[in-house]
Length: 365
Image 1 (cartoon, helix red, strand yellow):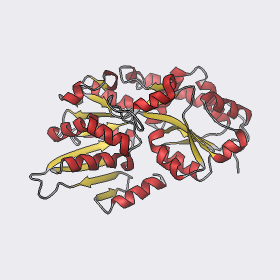
Image 2 (cartoon, rainbow, N blue to C red; image 1 turned 180 degrees about the vertical axis):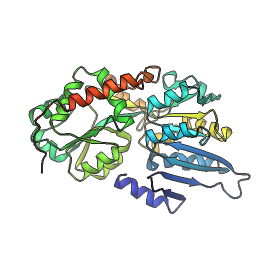
Image 3 (spheres, rainbow, N blue to C red; image 1 turned 60 degrees about the vertical axis):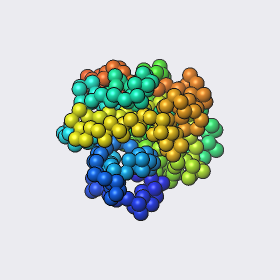
Image 4 (cartoon, rainbow, N blue to C red; image 1 turned 90 degrees about the vertical axis):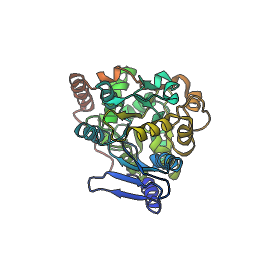
């Protein structure tokens, strides 16, 4: 977890009960107001860090004080496995691991939401009426000032490939990205980029030649960039990056001008949800204009609601980047990314390209 995230959570302790288990799981509990009548439980399991989730949870709870809300934050793959182990443990599942969420819904684990908000939600941002995208989050690069001063501006994937090829020794050990084998997000981005760019495998080879460090999370990458250990972070989740970069003037965000992937967090109500009525109310809030306005104004997640524009919305991002945006499609194509043979083939090629250079420069001391 990054330094800014920890500061947010420390202040949160003054208002509600929060805990961090030995395994690293974050849990937030918002009790029902004593005079609000009979408490109605709501259990949310998610892969969404508390600094981003908290404004939504608190706003929903303020509007529904009779709800006793428990929120557990896990990694994407832990969340998926926990659901398979106990499909009746949570009322709402939220995750940025789009293929895994789609598989669960496609396998019959999600129940439909029958509401006006669901019926009017954009067709490209939902599957049936069971799985809903509720954020619009670009995948970005983060560059340290020392890099810009030595090598100039970095504006595209092509720029990164050229710089890695031209300066492998100077950049050795100074670049970091996701490990696609250990990270669900990293694997998803890898398979999408392999479809998008004919030069993607050349870039993977160049990353390997420069002894690029491999990480499990955006937070891990940010920590190394903030310390100056790394000069470039490749494929970080933009929604987690913005607040950190604002606190660290040495860092800047790059939305690649050739193409910028966009991921969307997906939400569903499990078919075996223990409290389906409260779950429906929360999901309705999440995709309704009220919840989406909270996303736009109080988080970095990017609101999808078609009635909203201006800062913090998908509309504004489209106006800025236009055709360069490449949202990951919510549809059957996501299942192909989880086919075991295809997954093994992609990871095998990724490793082979990354290790193509048998003699690599020594990392920067």
